[in-house]
Figure 1 (cartoon, rainbow, N blue to C red):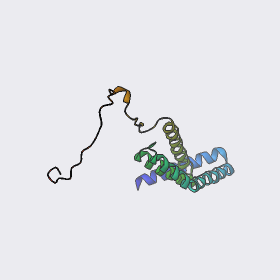
Figure 2 (cartoon, one colour):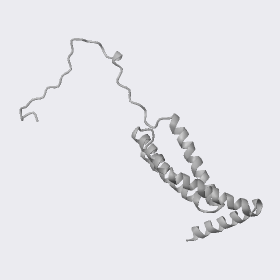
Figure 3 (cartoon, helix red, strand yellow):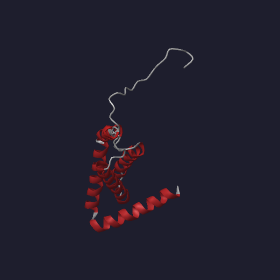
Figure 4 (cartoon, rainbow, N blue to C red):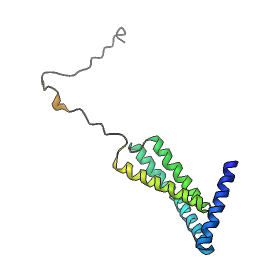
Length: 141
């Protein structure tokens, strides 16, 4: 409860200070614009989720990164919808963090690709046949 009151105090203090600097109409415009951006992010969340599922399936991101991307994107969108300067700043920082992670993950794969063994290192003996012998006798099972 005390953390919520501290947050609320800081939010009101920062919002009043910014509103006194930029004016009431600009503050109203900022609140409406940030709420609109948050709603757009929520509407596009389905496409973002599908994209993240594809990246998880292709092993370009691990499960922890998958959760982080989706939950932080939702949290950032909700914070943008809430009125106030502090929530908007936190939401923008969250989305910049997600954008940075997206750029880094595009150029560095999370899991290295496994290459088949190089057959040039093996001795080439055409007289050897690889085989597996399966017996039906119960003593070998």
